[in-house]
Image 1 (cartoon, rainbow, N blue to C red):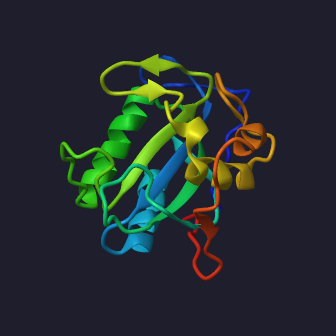
Image 2 (image 1 turned 90 degrees about the vertical axis):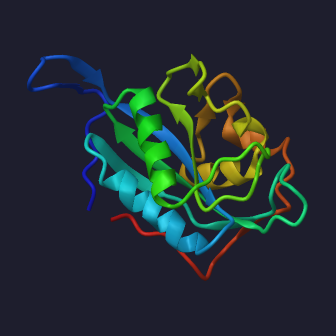
Length: 189
């Protein structure tokens, strides 16, 4: 069982003495190419294997229609993972990109192109970022049923920074294409 650190404790680096706050992170994972479930489980496992990251929960798996994707794109499998970490947001983003590459994610110029694995940082504590490598909170999370539905499943009182309660955001988005898959599940390592 994954041990969850006390969110009120600040972790100190043993070598440098540098203090690192423990932050709650919301991560969205999705796949619509190849073995979709294997890719999602691989993402969960890789995140769990990351030093200074503690997975606390994973949502059900949802099959979702692609949003803004090229014609002919297949449905996604999506889930949300909650974790606690002392890693800086940019380092966590680097880790997510590395995991995507390990699952043969190919980046193209085509917006919302099909992908073997997509890992998005939705929210990292109360951290805000807006640069070439990271935007926090995720700029389109408030509009995405495939993020909001599984996140709400895990935390019914969740609040998306700068946007409001997830429950209220869900009332404003179309979730008809977000279907819970009762026949498959992800496991916390």
